[in-house]
Amino acid sequence: MKISTKGRYALRVMIDLAINGNENFISLKDIATRQNLSIKYLEQIISMLNKAGYLETARGNNGGYKLAKNPNEYKVGDILRATEGNLAPIYCLTEEDCQRKEDCKTHSFWKGLDNVINEYVDSKTLEDLIKTT
Image (cartoon, rainbow, N blue to C red; front, side, top):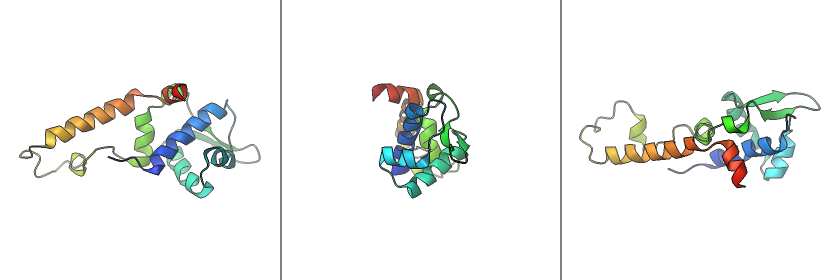
């Protein structure tokens, strides 16, 4: 499993909003400048996070984005899943009708790895990441 730039940048954006928001809306331009990201790519990430209900938005001169909840209420795993989809290390774990599941000698190994990954990313919050930086 490899986390794409969308997943990595989504975490950076959420951390940026948590640190710099203070109940204020932050412009896309400010986030892009601080994080050294293109506004065009950032718009895609913001759209995913907004669709997941993680952000509040406001239009106008003082508009922008802010977190919808406190940083300790966001699991890293949920943010990654909002941008990456399922975090399963192999495709067949996402398929309900895998034809080889019963005979596959490696299925339990991959399932165990999937469990470890999900337990780890779900054990960390946005606030945990902020504290380590």
